[in-house]
Image (cartoon, rainbow over all chains, first blue to last red; front, side):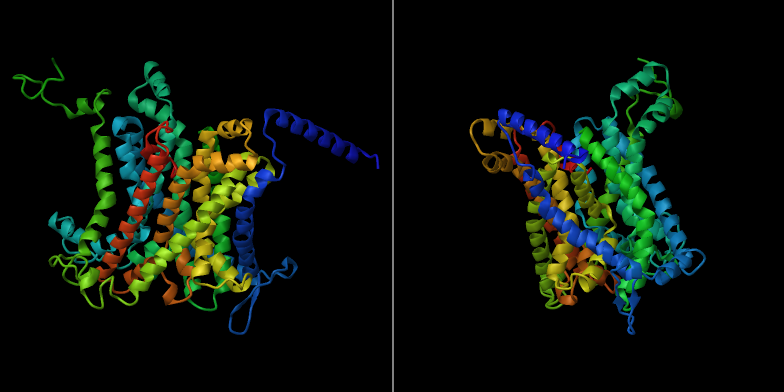
Length: 320
Length: 305
């Protein structure tokens, strides 16, 4: 057995022996399995509960149902039946779901734009002018992280009631002539809820990126004769682009699975989002295959942003 | 003394808003105003909701006087006496404690392993752990629900299932925080210990783990706070009303006909979360005294970014 394969394996063994010897000289030597073994519990956990559950999603989505519409998952890919899934997809393009998907995109995009318009100046201010009060500002910015999303939506629910403080204030200021039924299924209420709910999660990554910009680059721009606004557009904004993208992605991912904002602030079919469709398949019996198909479509929509975000965070961690 | 004259000066130039706006050296008053306005906006609704938990009447939108009725005075409808809400409080704490006990050790071990184990499988493993963290919660919740129903059927819905669901994505918090700490402490201390004759396992036990305790404190606090607030995963994996924690009860009540008792429940959770986070923060600050490059607040916050 003197083929090239053995030759390479011998040379590999040789190098490993050399490495081991040099490591021994330095005083530290671990067997090859030593460090990987630390990661084993988490890996087993992820395989059994994360990877496997997504396989179940596939098996249920491409499986069949029994007489009572209970799901009969099919775990062998060669017996998969794509009937339910294609039916679900056809509903997106021109069917019953088209409205919901378009609405979800519209809400998510509007809310993200508002989040960015409000969040950017704040992140910019704290990063550039925070000075000695940076710790205080950051402490206040992180406060909403520790208030449950549920409570923050619930708080708005009370404020937006017909006899609530928002209507009181707006009629007092003569913005409104009569109280407005905010909670009666209006897109504007849902978008307001999304903006309020997710804005804190946008500001912090944005701040992180803006804080990393070297001040001397801005000074160089100014020294070379650019006006403050021109420095902003030509230097600050381009340098903060990854932060903008990361912040927008980190808020849009959960928005695509958000059913609770709608459930607390509207409950009307006029504002249903994708998340509500998925939640409905959980609440009502016999829709497991539909639910799994919906989950698959959402994963398809989100997979690229998710991968981009993971790469961004791992790179940012390496830079630190 | 021309443009920067104060109001006390007898003859000052009229204040010109446009010139003020264009002055590149002025203080960023507009940005600062926006920031404070935002900060007020971000907490004011919650403060009002907290105040209304002390309302004397049934309304959550008009004030009818102060009372502790919705906290414990009402024999049936108050938070601490309602036969449905009281077990939910215990369930909330049970889930948060169990999740912390599993997620933090598993995540810490994973972070240590990943810090020293390089290569493609390591990258893939890291990717999978962080993926569970960025996937929308409803997707993970439904996936786990279907898995418990169809594949790993020996795992019952209820406390066991809920803890498994929470741990699956909370591991990531511990991993992120412990890895950040590992990067700052490096290998030097362990190598010093081994130069002085400690075995690899002993140097991990006696040197590395004590150095990692602050990060473990911090991640325990964050995992606990996050699990107690969770209402998506635990709702999908609950087995009926008696395993629903307080957060799910709040969600259900908020959709039906909420009373200020719901405000009291939410306030109670808020207090629990803030207590744990504050404790975690002070434990972190104490354990890293003299070792920090930046302020404790900034380091604690960098875990979130």
